[in-house]
Image (cartoon, rainbow, N blue to C red; front, side):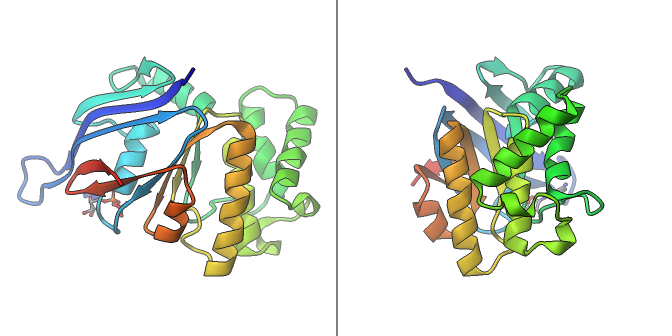
Amino acid sequence: MSETVLRLSGITKAYNAGKPNEVHVLRGCDLTVQRGEVVALVAPSGAGKSTLLHMAGLLDTPDAGVVEIAGEALQDKSDRRRTQVRRAEVGFVYQFHHLLPEFTAAENIALPQLANGVSAKAATERAHDLLDSVGIRARAEHRPAAMSGGEQQRVAFCRAMANGPKLLLADEPTGNLDPETSDRVFAALMTLVHETGLSALIATHNLDLAARMDRQVRLEAGHLIEA
Ligand code: ADP
């Protein structure tokens, strides 16, 4: 039986509403992502991909519409509940890795688990297992500055997965890498996602990467269109 992990319905969002510089970014976006599905969110820069991901990840609220994660409508819930669900169910990856420079790869992946009440031993073990699944267990004790761009981004994927979220949201996750590295790092991400049965919404303007996902949706003039 399919299980809906993310449902967006009628999402609208404008910045600077009512002012001369108003930007109406989303004009009624509908999207359903099932468990295990990897969906490409395709659009050129400035179309509103980050805005949509922020709504889906409960980092911002829409002007209108419904944001459901694992069956719970969250757009009007308290900040406390939204933060709880975001921490437990959502992992984020950005174009730049945002790893903490003074910590090792394993520590960067262990930290969100410690914040979630996991023991140091279990968190470290999980960090090593995750690094193993993206092929860089040997880099566990390296700090970010001692890793390549591709390795840093793999660590960022592992950190996003650290607390076992249901939904991964990624914003141009390989946009900062050269094409060959991007290809390999993307393959590692797909393996990790498929192994864990996670759902993912991955924004990209790279049509080759988009074609390797399960489904594509295009963001056009504020609407989502199945490609
Ligand atoms: P994308 O991720 O596709 O590049 P964004 O969601 O970042 O697009 O931005 C969509 C549009 O909204 C752009 O025109 C951008 O300038 C505008 N925008 C984004 N964030 C803000 C903000 N905080 N205030 C005003 N305008 C914004």
